[in-house]
Amino acid sequence: PAGASAHTVMSVLLNAQPVRRRITIPEGLTTQQVLNIIDITDGLTGQTPASVDEGMLMPETYYFTYGDDRGALVQRMQSASDDALDELKTPEEALILASIIEKETGVAQERALVASVFINRLNRGMRLQSDPTVVYAVTNGSGPLGRSISKADLAIDSPYNTYRNAGLPPGPIANPGRAAIAAVLNPAESNYLYFVADGKGGHAFATSLAEHNRNVARWRRLRSQQQGSN
Image (tube, rainbow, N blue to C red; front, top):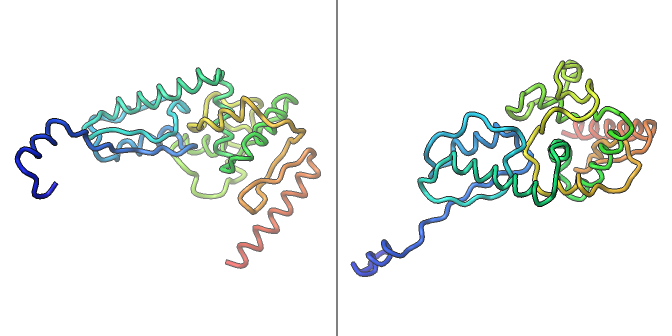
């Protein structure tokens, strides 16, 4: 503090706790996006690991002190993910599905419903047809697509394209949070097989293709109205 005596200065130097810094990793980022954040965070030292398996960095707020190593912070994130998986007894397949749910909806109360849709589709042998998996296939996990998905994107030859391939993709497409993992382990009980944006930040769910097509038409009309008003 300003005006401190020599005794106070010595006491601070000997006994004061270091300043705690923090870095917050939002849910749903790809591993490359997380590593980019770590790479530009002031106060950290050392090299950011060149590559880390997708889905294995737990999104949370992490505290560190000036001079902490970037590699050590990444290891803490991996350990937090491992702890969550052990705590929730989650198999690899659940982690993959949780990463898709994390990217599909930002509405907390919808996660269990979205999980039920994908689980119902898997149980019936239907393709997941999840847009975020297509984005991951096109960008290779580097970040957002930055435009609408095209028909060419939907046809891309990639094991992550769930429009072309049945079942789950070979690995996670993002780093899911605990809530998304929990939604996979405790999905809602429903007969829903489809969902589409409702124009209000959430989704409209349907049990049949006919009902889904009506929801899609309603969404397209609403989107056209919104674009016209802008």
